[in-house]
Length: 112
Length: 113
Image 1 (cartoon, each protein chain N blue to C red):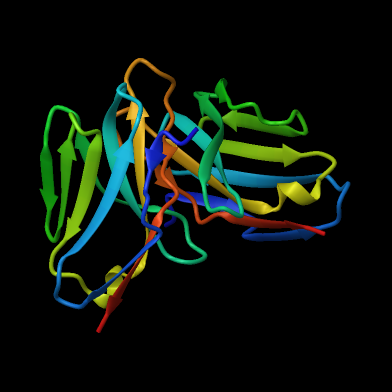
Image 2: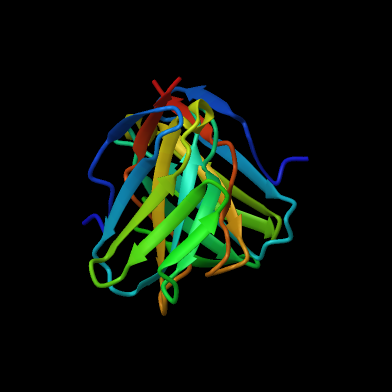
């Protein structure tokens, strides 16, 4: 009965490949996010969608493309993976400011 | 440009004692603050929050204090338990801005039995 779920949990791939990470929330929240936790452990926002509409794009390379087929799903597609993309990617959802953001368990991406 | 700072990377306390985790921020537009707890290989889980209209919020063993003039908040855990051992993140959101949480770097708390 997971509130925010992500697949896969682990992803090991070669440089240059294209990969996708999927996220689903069953909380009925209107807004979903992708955060990246890099090797320095900072959690930084990448994208935010509200009801399938992109509202935040934080200077992320255009190799990263989010897609929201409906408000319960936010997927992240990454083209031409680079070594520096290795990180933990967290999906989150919320009902907006002043409420709690709920996070998924993370997807650990390792690019070799 | 770190807008949310957790300057101490780690803290070790004895079980039963108080743990105090500190957080400073620079953006005066921040008006809602949250603390998250994170275990290894898991996502952050919400612990407690505080709005800028308050200076204290309490939930069981957890209390968050906000000092707006100093742009400082702290999380108090009393009494600390071994299960509290985790990384704690301070996060903030700004009024009038886009809906995003800005996180500190995190602080590792170890509670020794």
